[in-house]
Length: 104
Image 1 (tube, helix red, strand yellow):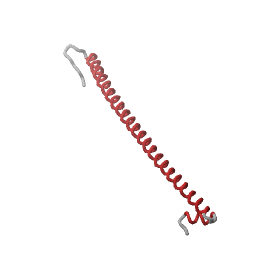
Image 2 (image 1 turned 90 degrees about the horizontal axis):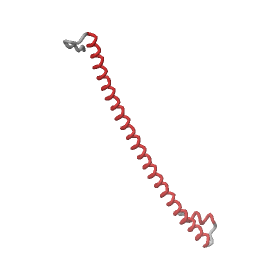
Image 3 (image 1 turned 30 degrees about the vertical axis):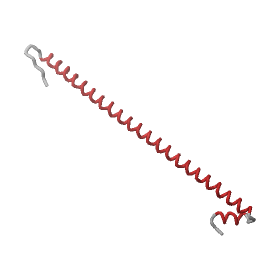
Image 4 (image 1 turned 120 degrees about the vertical axis):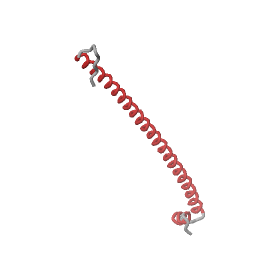
């Protein structure tokens, strides 16, 4: 694009053209920079959300495991109590374990 004014020489017109091109280029660079910045912000936001979600899932999983271990601990206490009571009635260890497991 040539910008020609009546009182402007050909060299000045080329300089104006370069000035106009530089202005347009700088505007394009600003737009690209803004798009890059928005892109980086959205990717950082996505990373943060994924990180928080992973932490929450991990916490829930650990809580479920802890509850499972507590349940096993309670069951173990009940089983040991049963075995001790059965041994106290005069049965052997093997008979007591079999009885507490549901055998005769």
